[in-house]
Length: 89
Image (cartoon, rainbow, N blue to C red):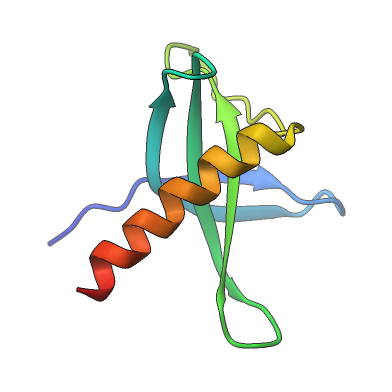
């Protein structure tokens, strides 16, 4: 049985939401670590919502830091697209 890596975050209303880690990766380009996760909800088109943040893997308490630059979002999108292509094969 596969063990899921889960954590809780507070949403904008202060409600605790359980999220599942999909994967993490380090970018040599930015020198940062990224976490890609989902709360397993779907959008209006039925697609599972996926989120990404910067995090410090060495921190005792995980803090999610928003990705604010277009360059960093492009890096995350490229990784997501390559994983999706692999899964479609």
